[in-house]
Image (cartoon, rainbow over the protein chains, first blue to last red):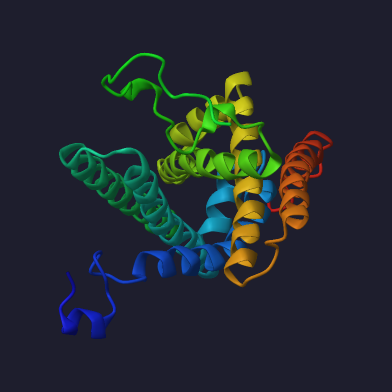
Length: 123
Length: 145
């Protein structure tokens, strides 16, 4: 059942409309150039000394790009894993638990990585 | 002439024999099906890869001991196999993601086109992963150090 207001807003049963779909696409487009940059960096730092790795990652532009890569990747991970859970887990309790677990894991991974990037920049 | 559904009288419907969609197990595997499920599998694997990336950044920020510990692990036979897996998975997910974005724009829906781009994603991802490892093993990587 949709109220006239709901129909006008066009948000449907999810209450967020096409938000999930749209952000999945938006993050994937942003990740194309960032992934190419990431591949260039990882190959460039193969067998690099610790000093070389630190001095590369400590440069402001590189630190910023790495932070953007980490944050956008993790947001993409959160959206993608949620679709997998929606498709395969049909028990409401287990679904809620797994969605929250993904959210916590993503936030924990992201804050850890961002702290490490800041710490490298200050070394 | 349709065969009779039942030879005996009225009986309870056999629920276990009911046809269930989508019959995944009886289809002949097509390239389009393979890349579809592999996109999902590589996505899940790369979620763990994001955690390894965070671990790598932490190891660099932790000074010489942390750095050497991570690199000893990454350079071990198991570490190299895992890194090759992540390299291929990232190449595959990137290429298949671009294929998905092309669909979102309305391109590539023809049956033969979809089959060809699926095969292209499989082939190209393997070539890219192999080329990256060949590039490293021939000593061409490490240009930022």
